[in-house]
Image 1: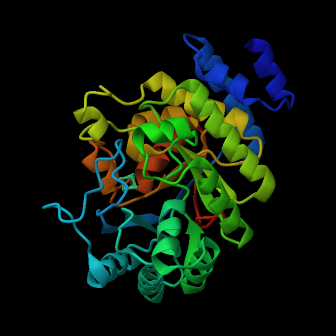
Image 2: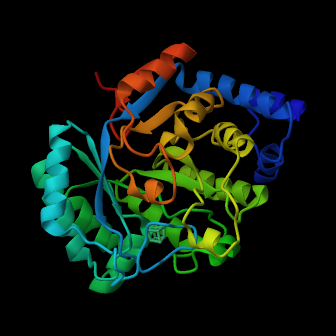
Length: 359
Ligand code: SF4
């Protein structure tokens, strides 16, 4: 392992098999991997830690996919199903305007009633109220469904949304880009090849996106590393990913937990390794985001020591994580972020969605 880390520091590109080996590390090896990732982080992006002033816009929890790892989605007609409609979107975006956010993240189930035209309407409402914000929405799953509902191609959906004000595409829904795993916990989601095709298509249409991984449920280290390979190959082709975001599975209240298939989510060792090996593997993605809403502020500090350089967003509201039992997924005050970065001797900077530094 020491030799491999030295090779990486000298420019060796990790293979997925090598990454899988590192993701299985135990004991003090974990800290050596984190230390190597910290060196690469410093060489790649320096000491700046970024965040974006963003807010989730909760649109609907009605979802046709009903993934087994998700505590948020509801079938249509469920007693607590909701769709906030135009008035609800307007109210949330108006609040976001008062909060001076620069990114609006639509957080939503894949509502079976939503057509491409409905997405265009919703994006248009947000864009009219806050035209300067980046509207971050439309995962590949939503794009696929909207295309089907409207009888048009996925490229046409992306173009319509872009013309209505869509700023960047959500790289969520990636989960684990290994079909055998997807079959186990999100069989209704599009398969890996389709997810990849739509992301490449969107990048080629000029829209950037995030890249994510959700780990810590039924997936193995080998499958996580295989997912890394899919993302890196796309980035080699398009350069359209702004960042990579490891998202630990939050298990509480999920169908997987209720079925007794999981008793917890990821553990700290896995989290540290996911941040660190992401940094070491993705020589073509500059930004590794530490999702404080999923791991909490204390682990976020450690994530920044293990290859991370971005704290994501202020968020304000994240019902997806809260419904699954995450305690910290509400609002992260930049002053609290600064306390962490000051402690680490790093510099906190606000950014846009596509990583232009502000202030
Ligand atoms: S993860 Fe997304 S697509 Fe899956 S059930 Fe939850 S809201 Fe629906």
